[in-house]
Length: 375
Image (tube, rainbow, N blue to C red; front, side, top):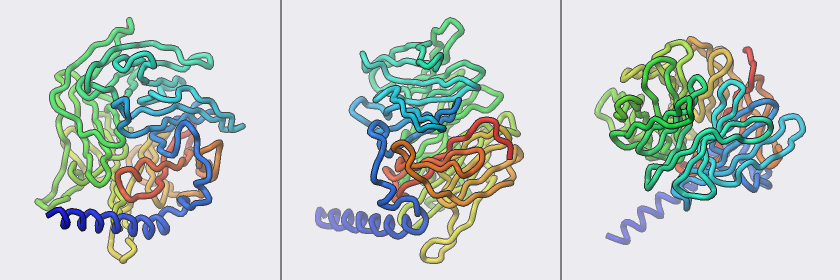
């Protein structure tokens, strides 16, 4: 039995390497060796999230599941005009979120593995506004802002900050399917939070959290009994982005994207409670000529509508969900230790290998929206 297992593993690795070299060369022209000569010493190449605010690009790295038992990493900002680079935290940053003109950060305390801090950027420094302790495996992984009020989602608890900076905690009933990345959003009305998980070739899916009861519910739509029947299947579909729906106040939008072993699969979905509908699906052809769909690797709000990105193109959608702009993926160039492009009006495209950790995607693009953009 052992020789068979070893042979299967060897065949799987060979297929992955072959797929990576073939698909990456055709679909990811920016992943050439010439662009890999230098990387940021704090972030590395596994950039999890970006925010553009007041002339600076803020980037959070992630180490996957590290020795601290979380998915934290460093926080670096780069001046968009002069490429000036500042290291704000070398380790421990779990999430960052922009709320109007404010930048909020969730991080682990340097003094204790069980203590966590929520900070806001004020007068060129981070001001700590909330602290809490979280023992054992109840590790925070996401920060959400709604009306200036921070919500922290942990593996077993949801915490909402009160006006006096104390915390209201709700214990969760159920478990998250945590992956290399988590995307989180809250509809403009209602008491639910939607959490999308990216586990690459192992799927991920979407889960809804009731912030009053703590109940975690799996949100799916399987149209038949096929193994990977979709369009939203937690066993096969990694969710790579979730945002509030700009047109429907009780809904969210979510993207699915996976490139693995010669296959590309992805779509843009609208989720309203348990109802899942298809908004957009971009057809493409694989190396063998088979019909496939473009993998969506990101979804971010815009001043008007929203942006989505695949390995092939950047799309702008109006608030009604109709696509009104399309741009090819631009050439990403070195910029203060990272690789990015500012060619497309309204967004910055940044290179990351975060999806490469769980699929044969190669380098993939990350979207960072700019302020005050009108298509």
